[in-house]
Image (cartoon, rainbow, N blue to C red):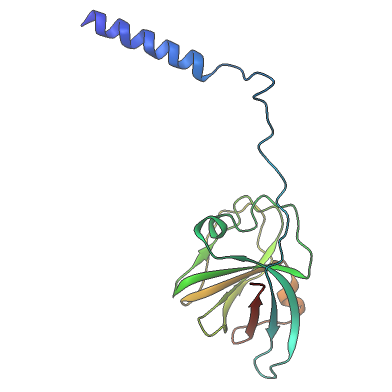
Length: 165
């Protein structure tokens, strides 16, 4: 039994020593790189009572697991004419948060008919509190914080978009 304990202690020491060794200069590679906007389509927001366009955006589309998990994290800003559109395969209750997001956003939830369900205005950067939809959503649009109030967006308004395929 004593031999086993000594062997475990030696292995643990070797593991801790090699696991905590200082990296050499060749290993000190900066793994963070700035994420830039990639235009993948265009989107318009329309007032429900008039069908008039109140805003147009170049959109980046998040439609796979990696993109939907990352979203606008690790970016320092976004132009006012840019937005990120999350497209999900189904309509269900959704919830977003601002973890690792450096700037305020308005988060807009849309149903499968592209009708605005609800929105969260001027979210707090880095806040991990849940920002849920109030009904099942298929699309989520992230725009710069404050823009939805500027355009007086409200539940019932609509969106249209096309992809650059």
